[in-house]
Length: 174
Length: 187
Image 1 (tube, each protein chain N blue to C red):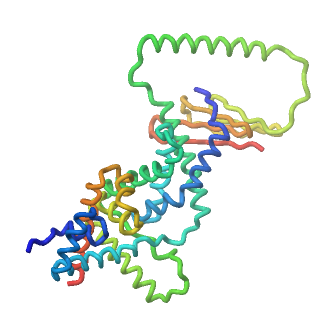
Image 2 (image 1 turned 90 degrees about the vertical axis):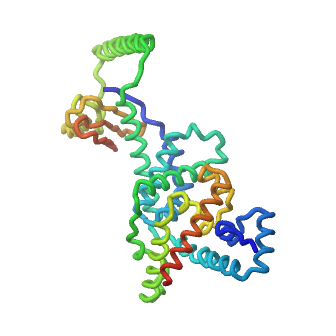
Image 3 (image 1 turned 60 degrees about the horizontal axis):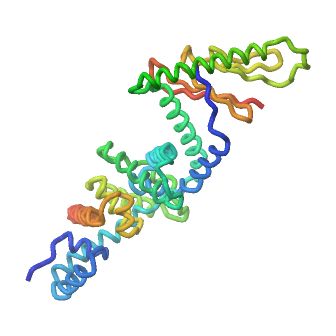
């Protein structure tokens, strides 16, 4: 048996603060990529554990948010690679907007399913690039940073993503 | 007339081309109805995608608490697994050094134990619960009664203490590989 001293309270508080500061942003970021609450929660936890286990890699504290975003993106992309298709469920229950009629809720839900079906045709990196650019509205430079690749590669992913999605939309219209 | 390719039109739609390519494509679009339609189709794609930005209305506070607790558990489990993993390579020198340090620590412990075990004038017994680790797990004694939380016979257990009086035991079950983290809080 070995006895160890537990990390001090100060460290635990620092870790808690780090999670509190960033968790909502990271959750939303991952949710946009995987489009599922349960998976987003698991992956958010995974991203924070990875970050805190390797916090010595973070040289500049000012860039913690950026560094964490990159870890979160990679975690989500790995997940999308592992699961050939993500499952989409439990989305309809908790949306805001109690004023909506059941018909409106149904229509929105159908539209969402339609978009999610289109996303499944994209590779994980195309999907991530397209969502960051066209859903989150990030500039291509930031998308490149998060995906850890060049701006030219990001442009190629964005162009492929839009082209595939367009074909999908046209096919569904027919 | 030479038309821009699909990728160029897709990028032009979102303003993602460099200045020169953008200027050249705009010039072409000014006189090409077909390419304008292509760009309009890409615009439609871009306009439909923000529908994916919605996030369900979630109980954020509960979610934050769950995530914090699971992150803490994950970090503890990670440490536990790391502490069980045998090192891949060891040099003889380092190995020998560790043996010496281990013996020295054991000697210090024995001497300290002997000093502490000397008969001393009896002090008034402290009231309140006592939490301690035993060969079987964590034991809490209070009011003459003892409650034990066993480690299922696992020998390699990492115990931890904190200043607020909690004791934790972490171990990996050698048969199943499951990581167990027990924490007993005493008030």
